[in-house]
Image 1 (cartoon, rainbow, N blue to C red):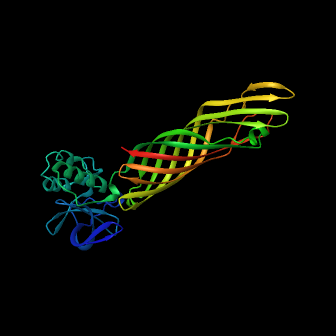
Image 2 (image 1 turned 180 degrees about the vertical axis):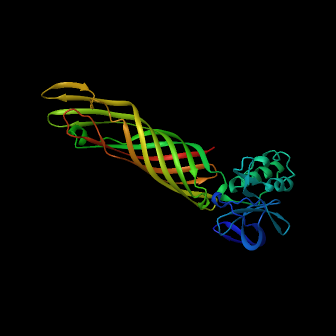
Image 3 (image 1 turned 120 degrees about the horizontal axis):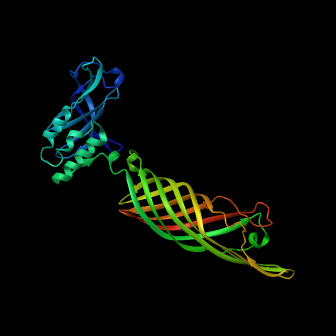
Length: 342
């Protein structure tokens, strides 16, 4: 036995069915065309009951069970047959079902499931998983390409958000808005790519974030106090790459975010030598609700727990400030997040 990229192979002399399998190549013959060949079998499940896999040079998939040192082909053949009207119908000889019933007879629970199991890699791996769960046996090795394809969980932490303006009135552009510290919450659904040892995934998050900040602007003629804030529900879609380090897993992720704001704070109070005191909203049409950005994060996961540091760069947003020419605001945020996988 030898391994390549955590996939285990064994040289074996086996019997395979060389019959056509593509729809446009099928014939009316129901007879199996067995041939003997020396091949490298890939081990999908290893234990007291094992499952092995071969894709031949024609792209046809074959599955094998093992009895001692002998590998036995799970036989399946598709062919055409004439019906009563003379038309051709597709027939599938599912002898593998009877073979599996006999091979996995220790578990009565899965016998009923066998009648519908498909001759496909993921379905057969799941069948063997169910068998070992039923019998309480130990799986020495399992094909990682068909392990759990997703992760679901929640996260919480703190956000640190900085607001800046450009091409805006001086009382906004020159004001020094302090960093806003807030609680951040979310849930995630990670879809794991079926290969690459589970290292690559797409992380999808529904993320609640908020900010609220205020600043003063002073000149010889006016004093302006402003308060700004917004709550967001944000969708983050990121590519994630994981790399194992001893008993933990390090990861990095990056992608795009889209969000929509609600419950705004939008207030200005001004004392002017010429116009007196006044108050009201800064943005007469309200804050820009649509949020677009680029999140980039790095973290580490141990068992079901994770810690991540993330930077979020908000794309430039146009606001609706009375008397200003195409003003824009920029939000940048740092997050420290703790996650838990269910």
